[in-house]
Image 1 (spheres, rainbow, N blue to C red):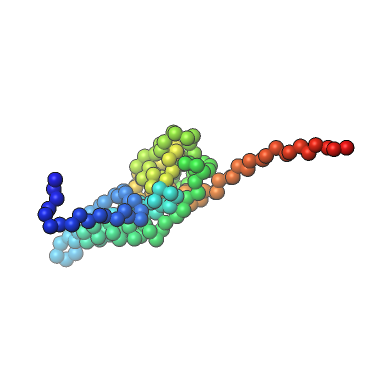
Image 2: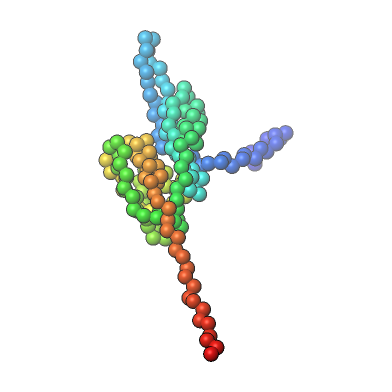
Length: 172
């Protein structure tokens, strides 16, 4: 029991979006007096209900960089058109040297994806998908091309249930 006497238990509110830190890099700038260090954070945010975004930003410390990247990701949010728990059709997208291939999967197959693609589709709320990342292994570029691929998806076709025509008894 780590409760301190006299302290009220504060309930933390659940954030609007879940976040996953893809990459955290220490970047340097050489100036007259030496080196200046900053941090670059690459972050994916999503609500697991079809909205997802990728943000990248630099800051003087880690928490500052993550906060800025979160705001950047919120600005670039997209809404993914889901068909049950997967995507409607195959899609292949290329951006720079990053290429990603996304395919719908049958129910219960799970997320077959690696690295940045997995983080993006997970936070988008896609539960069954097969993917392959080709070309570069740069996490930021792979995440961006995955977002572009999800943005280019067409809306799933709605299967209409056709009821059999009711036979009208002819009363002649």
